[in-house]
Length: 170
Image (cartoon, rainbow, N blue to C red; front, side, top):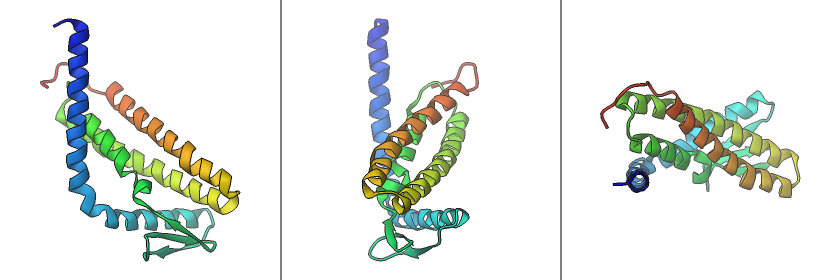
């Protein structure tokens, strides 16, 4: 097999494996989404208090917060779950890394994504509370979603770059 053919085969194997792992993890973790929405809403509430914004937890008809009279939903897309699943799936699907390195990467990646996502949500809420709606929509809808994937790619790159050197059975 030529080098380019081998590279294409490796890439296809990675993408297919990532897809299978993503789907399996997605359905395995889906039952936890309502619980995770409440956890995220509660941690956001605490973070907002740190920056001087009082809010109350809302659990019906959606999970979220009421801050300064505005209802803010913590939807599935806000949870960072898709990004976590992509990161974990990519780490698991990557060949040539020890299982220990993969587990450490998933744990530290999850923590890093959680912290970044907290910051992203708090900043989005502050923008919603203090800016014109059009600007808040741009910040929330475009900039932070794009930035989240940039951070995701950065975590993966840092994980690859910090792998222990030496042969590993794949």
